[in-house]
Length: 99
Image 1 (cartoon, one colour):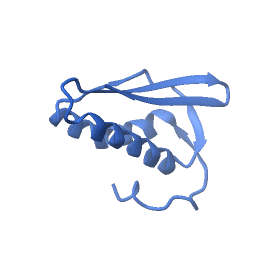
Image 2: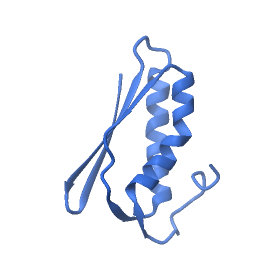
Image 3: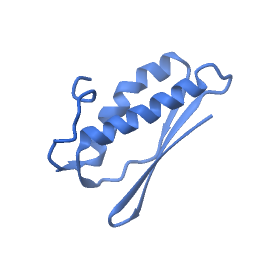
Image 4: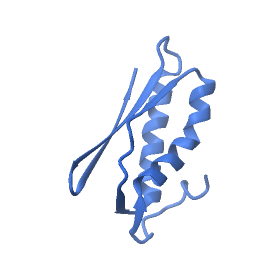
């Protein structure tokens, strides 16, 4: 958790498996969602390596997932979906949708 909460602006870009970055972030939220009765859905994660500051990707994703949690935690129907698609050779799109 400490690695997610720091300023990563100075981190070097590194080739990182997309699955690793997403799974580490999702693991931080999964239990909280489960205990709140939120169904978490995720698209198949493509087997891609990306050149990134993975900590920054994780920080943004964690913020978006937290925002979705806050928006639906008191709703009757509770689900959050993470969509992942490779748009082209250089572009990957992540989307968060909630009930």
